[in-house]
Image (tube, rainbow, N blue to C red; front, side, top):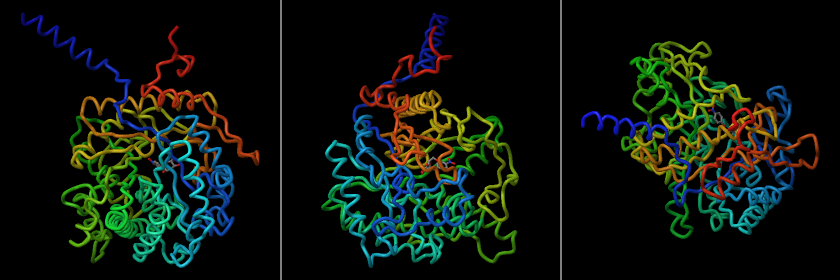
Length: 502
Ligand code: PNW
């Protein structure tokens, strides 16, 4: 008897571990994402002013790997109908794109509204509506008007008012057509990469200082835009508004090593928690370990105050709860190997403040140095978000894979398949509430400082041809079939020839 129970239990465990879910729940939605500066081009056309990426790429062209820029990009300003036709071909439920602040408000402020900017986005929104594609619209995807950067950009507290003004114009002009808004795309990348480092424009590199000034302003600006929408526009427009936070998920290299486990948690608090803790926890404010570490480091540097200013009670309350969903952008996982200062860390810096050494030696590779293929890390991140943030409703607002631009992109298909399978696992086994998924990206586009050398698209874009022809890759067929059937495609044709059944 005992042995038959053991056998039964073994069979159950075995069937459970072997089980791969393939079917998405009813109501789960699929989309693709882009961002204005990465696709639109027309950088100085019809009233648009210079943004920080125009400025960086024009004044320091060597800062982009292949010396390309966003001047023309995919020419979506002129070819948006082609974009919509491609979206229609894929069969997506929604399209995530961003608005160009400097196209709508050339001074950055509300004193001057550019009618052509309003027209352009209305045309795009009408073209989407004609195909029944829902817009999911990001207010800020990194392309700050240069005039506002000249005043200090996100390190200037006045930006709270400027952002609120810009959001107000967008809600008023487009709110009848847009029911889903994202305030900021990836605050970590904005604050750390652009103000604490020079990985993104405006490349201020005020490590350990500018990054924390930025987060203070950005979180307040986010909260003000949320409350403005909630109080003034939601009653008539009935939409939703959220923030999209990027995570590199950190795991201990050795899960049995208690110190590595603790340090991985610290790293996740510094990365995801920096922006999620103030918004999605009951307590609010920055994560405790972050407050403590930066205070200790600052003291060691002989400073009278911490480089990380804490929010006062007013702002803690004002920021808490200001996102209808948790938007997650996720690509990759790093491993924590031990305590200490990462060899690449500047002093002072966010990285040094963490106090952990990490390695990217995990999973398969991509064309992007930072992007390792670790689907299990995605599942762990999602479980951690459920636990850490009161079981939030989650949208995956970006996920994707880079190569150098092949049409038979088996690496991309296998990445999507394995990361989507990780989502199905946590939905089914852990009741994580993931409601929708956004693939990055519709077509190869201006990949910031990597230019066009790293390609993430479902469509290949030939940037040497002025017509910017777009060609669907095999992954486009994969995603189309996935969306049509709401199920992970099993066909052999989507597997690399070496992985096919004989
Ligand atoms: C995102 N990471 O950036 C951006 O939102 C997109 O504009 C960009 O094109 C896309 O991902 C691909 O890079 C990220 O280090 C930057 O984990 C860095 C990371 C993730 C996303």
